[in-house]
Length: 162
Image 1: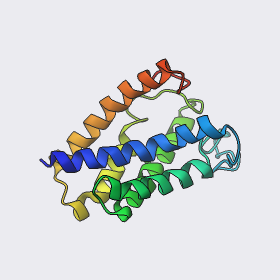
Image 2: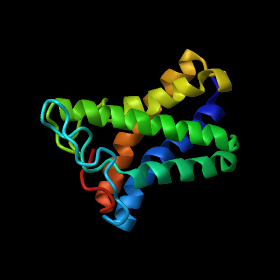
Image 3: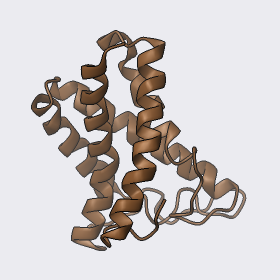
Image 4: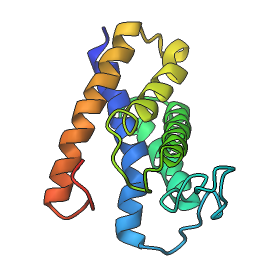
């Protein structure tokens, strides 16, 4: 297992997934263009929902790419982590809309696993991650995200405590 590499990747995952939330708190609705443009899927529900914005994805990629070298990894790794984390987040949002959960609705596991597992799998060969590294990274991200969410809610930085 590679503990330092896992910590570096966890920092990038936190940045990739946290940046859109922080951007929303700072910018409100400014520059918040919905990814799905308000389109409905064939089931009549929103394709992704109002909380998935171009601004969030753009800033996630920008911030996480810049953070890569700060944590000792290449900016390209930061960019890869952000792009794939956002793809995982969009995937989980799409699935949540299909099971009729509203934007921002809680789905433990579905909210954490794709946005951590997908990027770790994408970095697997480049960073020589083992299966144990990936499992550990996803597990730590899962628990950390649940705990951090409660803390951010306590300080009024998050709408819901999950």
